[in-house]
Image (cartoon, rainbow, N blue to C red; front, side, top):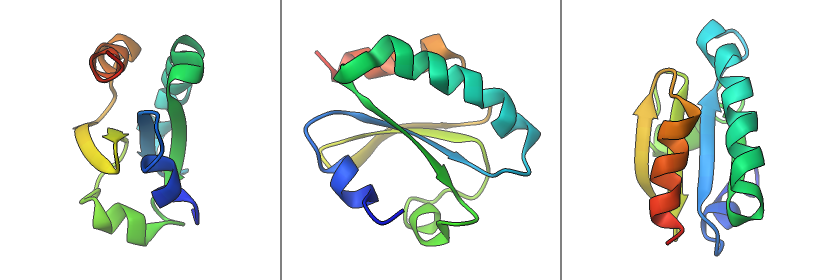
Length: 99
């Protein structure tokens, strides 16, 4: 993804799902991320980054297993959790950053 750095440097918090198409766990995260996007609305950006197509980004942020959900603010990763994560967990953390 060419614009990743510009997204995470922007004024809004960014929720990123690092994923791989071959991962069943990542497939189960897709509706969770859709829920996060719907609830957060225009107060946050949500992205999905395929680690197989964006190895350099994954390596830069130490992402070696998927799914890995991360929140970026002001260009820095401020939180991340590996594995399947409930929408309310992501949203609770995101709300802290939007205050």
